[in-house]
Length: 468
Ligand SMILES: Nc1ncnc2c1ncn2[C@@H]1O[C@H](COP(=O)(O)OP(=O)(O)OP(=O)(O)O)[C@@H](O)[C@H]1O
Ligand SMILES: [Mg+2]
Image (cartoon, rainbow, N blue to C red; front, side, top):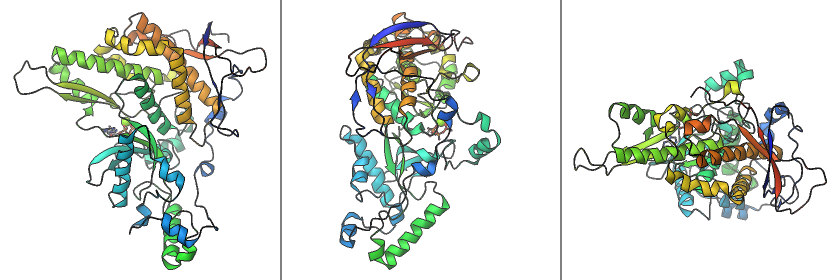
């Protein structure tokens, strides 16, 4: 650790058991060592064999025809069915007891797909992202399937395919775990909810199936063949676990109405500045975006990846300030790195160039987040919640997750200091990148300890963003 300074922090910490352990749900408090040298980075970046990760059609010989009829749903276009109601797992997967509104929204999407109103690919994006509609045909969400992510196996965009083929050394972002963008999307929403920022449209992990998603030709043929068997020989067909295409896991984000790309309004406001009251409102929203991005270490916050809704107010006259200005932070799929980006590809936060970034954080923002971020139990809770979310990925790796949390804790530490010192967002992003990892102990792991020692380490003493 030649290029690092260390400080000891005593904070509560819980050890996460891998999902492969016999009791995956257990969290044990411990101070076991986290050895960052165990897994070489190249190994982390090796894409796993996707075929192993994807569920396949299974054959259940024990299922009777009668059973199959009761769990199968009727409908003419069976390939498009969301396949819910078939297996207990699928019935519960898209239901969120703590968020009935969101459950209802996903339910509407499923009903729409059932009745032939399919998700529609967003053509401007670099990945397979889809506008999801309700039965009335209104867009209600944005679904991003895991396997159609920018570097996913089934990404439908040929430019990404070319990139992968022609320039493998620059392929992807070496600081991010590949193909977990959907978790990053949902994780950003979780952080937003937990801190009460209110800038990320609600996003969660769901499973959907639609003929408009990108499936390999073989999968489509297999589904068609099984359908024919089912129609011709129902007794044989009833033994299939699944008829139709396999559901895709991905992130589902609530669609926000009336918003435009940030660039649009930012340019407009250069010639027609916001009235002071709305300017203050925008400043507060902007600071929340900064806090979110900094904590999750978003590597992709260009001005096309956040939206602004601007309503200038009623018709009472030019000085009316009753309007509203709101920010929506979308496209959060490239966050939660397991190491800080290398300085030659620093992935800057593009909002740092805006004039709003030069103002010190407001009192209101400091009051909202500082007490939470200074509370180590809150930070530990946040890590626990992210663990529950991230561990559902089949490629989940505890060691990588710990590294992601080390970066996040480092970001939180810097942010906390910046807020205390009344710094501005520009000054915040100029702070040297910190990693907060569990200190190496010198004995056997101790279970159920309530405090632990963390080591704070500067990844690089010089600031990343000295260009500001
Ligand atoms: N929650 C949302 N509410 C409203 N519009 C949205 C939402 N999410 C995305 N959009 C719209 O869809 C467009 C593409 O979304 P997004 O950037 O998330 O997709 P993407 O496929 O990841 O694209 P890329 O990787 O190229 O940035 C956005 O520019 C925005 O106009
Ligand atoms: Mg985008």
